[in-house]
Structure formats: C-alpha cells, structure tokens
Amino acid sequence: MQKKTAFGWLVGMAALVVCSIPAFAAQFTADINEHDGEQIKSGKIYVKDSKYRMELEEDGQQIVIIVDQDAGVTRVVVPDEKMYVEMEADDPMSLMNDPFQSLKYTVSIGESKPLGTETVNGYECSKYVISMQGQDVMTRWVSQKLEFPIKIVNHVKQNKFMELTNIQEGSVDDSLFQVPSGYTKWEEPGEKPIDVPDWAKEVPSAPVMKPPFERDMPTGEMIRVRVEPSKSIWVKGKSKTEAGAMAKAIPFLDGKPIKDPSMYNNFAAGGVICARLHETPREANEVVIRISEGEVAVTAKYYEMVERSVSAGEELWYLVEGHDAIETRFVNLDSGVSICTRNYFKEGKQLSDDVVGPAKYRTVTLESKNEIYRCALSADADEIVFRVEKGAMLIKLGQYDSFKF
Image 1 (cartoon, rainbow, N blue to C red):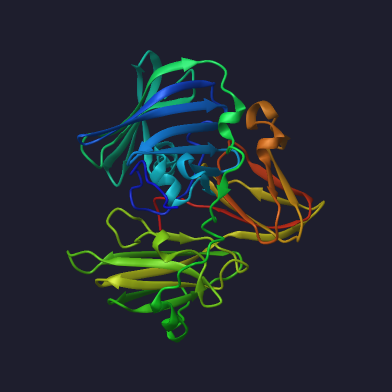
Image 2 (cartoon, rainbow, N blue to C red):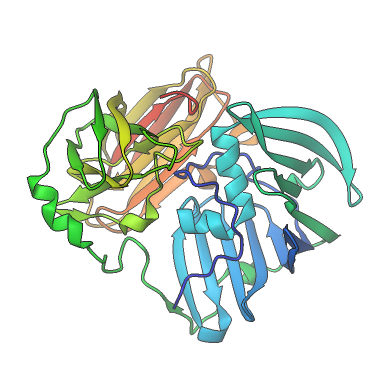
C-alpha cells in the first residue's frame, strides 16, 4: 500500500502540534474544496467534537482521512484495498494529507495576527494572518459558531487555498470515525522494518561532538551527538552557497535510525529555524547530523528539559512560564498499561473542567512498553500537575520560543 498525499500543505519543517483548532467543535458536514493553481480537488468532511473525517479522491482512488485530535491520531483509509495506516497527527505524512493539521503546525511556529471578522459562506469568522520572518504564509478564517476553520489560504504558493462550502449543521454518526471491520492495518511508521541506508554503516566511525559547537560541514560528512537525559538537541544550518544544501539530524538507536531518514526535514532549507530532537535515551542514544548535498554551517546545542520517571501514585509538578507551548513526551516504562492524568492550576486553585475540558481529554493511556505519546500543551495556567494513576511513565517536557534558537 502506498501512502497518498491528497494535500501538499507541509511547508518543509519539522512538525509540532498545538491546540490552534479548538478541541470541541460543533457537529456538521460540508464539501471540502482544495485549489492548487489550476487544479481543484473536492470531497466531503464530517466534524463531530474533536474528530473529523475527510473523504477525498486521489488519482481515481478514494482516500478517507480520519483524525482524532484528542488522541493525536490520524488514520488514512483506502477502501479499494481495505487497508489503513495509522500515525501520529503531527507526523509529516499526516501534515501533507491534512490542511487542518498543517494549519496547526504553521500557527505553532508563526506569528498570528487578528484581522477582525468576515463572513464566509454564511458564517461569521475570525480572520487571522500567520507570518514567518516578516512574510505572510497563511490566512485562516475560523467560524465563531462552529469553532472550525472555514477557509485557509496558503500564500507560499499562488492560488492555493482550502474552503468549506455547503455546510450542513446536524448530528454526525460516530461510526464515521471508525475504521470498518475487516480492514487490515498497515504497519505503522514506527513498527515497519526500516530500510537502513548504505551510509549508515559509516556512522560508528563518525566523530562524536558535544554541544554547543559550530562546524562547517561538506557533502557526505557526518557527526554524532549523544542523547542525554533532561536535554533536547537543537541543530540549525545555513547553506554556504546559493545552490542550497540538504542536511538532516536523525536519531539513531544502536546503530540504526529509529525512523526512515526520509521522514526528517532539511534543517538547512530556507525558512527553517532549526531541527529540534526531543527523544529520550530510551528511544535513541545518538543523533546523526549528515550533509547529503552542499556545504553547511552547522550550529548545535543542548536545550534543558524536565525529565522524570513517575510511578503509579506519584506526581510531577511543572511550573508554566509565559505563553509558549509546552513540548511534552510520555514513554511507557511498564510492560502493561500505564495511565497519566493532568490537572491545571492558577494562583493556587485547580481549574475546572469547564475551563480545561473533561478529564478524559486530559488523560494519556499507553498500552505497551516503550510506547510513546507526544503533544504540545497550551493553557492559561501557572502549574500543570501530571499524576500517574497506573503503571509507570517517563515524562519529558519543556517550553521554548519556536522563533528562537
């Protein structure tokens, strides 16, 4: 089964998801229309609370994309083959298939400016423009009633936009957000055998460098950076020539990449601030920085994070500073199910469900050992309390300005 890319909204940067689309939306159906230059693609969308389903056609084949925002999961279903692939909602492949998740990512790394209200297809919408490094990259119109984007314009490419039309409010059946019985699950990116590239055999002989450092790296050169507890690895690069360059930072575990290297973005591309690697030592023991094209001025540093093992009955208190999103990572340390809940506090008082949502939407459940869940949290709170109710988890989290290195 080949993964389809019904939308090409990814702007060539690593993925980070924050809650730019509200977790609770109205129930409705609509026609979804994507314009890309002279090409127009149409389909249907079904929305219910934090879930939505898009039915599209790609190269004559029907593609169904089901997104559960609370669980952070995207499922791409191919009815003709009775197969589906499951991935994290912020996976690069998910972003390429989904303009709404791509919008979330762009909001997380860009500067969003309100432009008042406009009526789009009969709905009063709040209008925002998103800019990066002084350039407008996207404009979005979010329905105040539906709490969902009605229109998204991508300014990076001429005449590229998505719009919802023929919106019909009403009950949406839960079965639409489930994969039909009898469908075969394709191997997830983290489970399928990884094609180890030929150059990987040279990794053990590459020099190990400890951040912070700066280094000019030519084509073919590799260096390694050790993954350390309570730290993330940040790498940025700039091409030394106008021809551009290709540079990637790839986590390795025991001499092998933990994902297909093609899934990682070029941190030397124009407009990319840096690559941020948040893996824990249980997931990767080193990051390989490799230049496949051109010559790159590389800068790397460690960024301090909070990282702690938390067992059932224990809590981790995190002090929130400012309004930057909180990069959060959970790793199951137990051989069975582990469950972690979180509560938010402001000025010493716990925020109610009316403010932060029901407990089930603030609960992370991991069912197998070393299973990973990551998200970026955003809340108007002073502290977040993580409590492991069952099993044990490794929790890693930290805040940073996504515009800064």
